[in-house]
Amino acid sequence: MTSFLIRGAAAIMTGLPGAAARHEGPDLRVRDGIIEAMGRLAPEPGERVVDAGGCVVYPAWVNTHHHLFQSLLKGDAAGIGLTLTPWLAATPYRFRARFDERLFRLAARIGLVELLRSGCGTVADHNYLYYPGMDFDTSAILFEEAEALGMRFVLCRGGATRTRQLEADLPGALRPESLDAMLDDVGRLVAAYHDPAPDAMRRVAMAPTTALFSLATEEVRQTAAHARSLGIRLHTHLSETVGYQDSARAMHGCSPVEFMARHDWLGSDVWFAHLVKLDEEEIRLLGITGTGVAHCPQSNGRLGSGIAPVRALEDAGVAVSIGVDGAASNEAADMISETHAAWLMQRSRGGERAKPTYAGGREEGGAAHASVEDVVRWGTTGGARVLGLDGVAGLRPGACADIAVYSLDDPRYFGLHDVAIAPVASGGRPVLEWLFVGGHVRVERDRIPGLDLAALGAEARQATRELLAAG
Image (cartoon, rainbow, N blue to C red):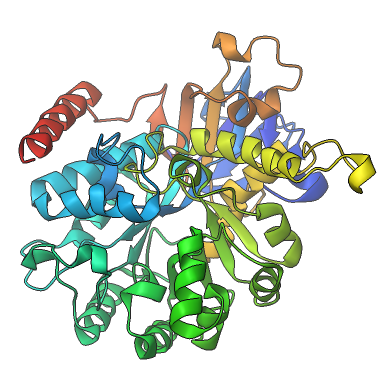
């Protein structure tokens, strides 16, 4: 089913900027997986009709930063009350040596299913489970699992050539790679999987886990050059906490963003996860170079890192997208929860900065700092922009039919004056009547065809018991 008519939507959000953020519809015609027309459309003879009466239509979400293997590490008691650096040792570094091929595949499947059921059609996973002598291919598993669910997938190939002190006592299986091994594997993955097309189902990005810490200084520029020689994008963590600021100053005498700039790691082909702690000059540098950000509000809140200055970043010219980050630091790793948090937390950030008039303040709070339209744009076309997937950028004629249709028959939506904002503003998870990726049905009536959700849950519970029993 790649040709059909979505008819009678109560509201349509497009993910486009400005006045184009909403479309009066109420219908969308899809032909061969492409949106052909939007407006008041009559069914053509023999055309399949998807009834969207009472539903809202959004672009499928684009998640630009995840760690799918962490889907079996939710709510770890040892890490639940820790900030980033001690949490890394307590949870992901503690458990990752225990992931064999079976557990890794299961975790990836759980994370992808969770995303798919929120209306997400594209996932960029920052996978860093690589080490010398590894006996299973985590990259291949991720592509296979995404393909089985019909999702667009971008592998951000992580890894490290050096370790932080907190990793010093890890078992041999988690030792760092050589730079040559990392670069060679990126080349292998690009040859095997990367599609440069604007509507690609598979992409590869160069993504050292945390370039400031994971590479020797001279290697940072080498990874950028190698990525660009292959025609792929660059991704890493940056400025998630004040620890990045302290480390960059101590090691290099500059800010984290300035360090990346000196080593060719800024530009429209680069996006960073987090960017919570920035000064004004860093924001300016990121903006003038058109660098992107994967804003991860729930993980940043869960770890107590802060709230990224997304409004200031976008105003400066930064491409803003949304990522859910790993489930070990975000127990609600889906795009509905994430966009709801992004909407609220940007407003809260504005309110936190408000001052009384006698102290020079000019506003009471930050309610104007993020609209639902902003958040939908960040979570859809913003994501397509940072990933270079222009073919899936929003609901418009000529774009790929990556479309989510949400039902509003739950009491949390009763009484809404503006139903278009429901999925973001009301939180929770609305019933997903339909999800299309390239016009293909991926979710129908809130069910993923061919998936036994109860069996997946049982398998997850057993796997969690195994991980806990291992100590």
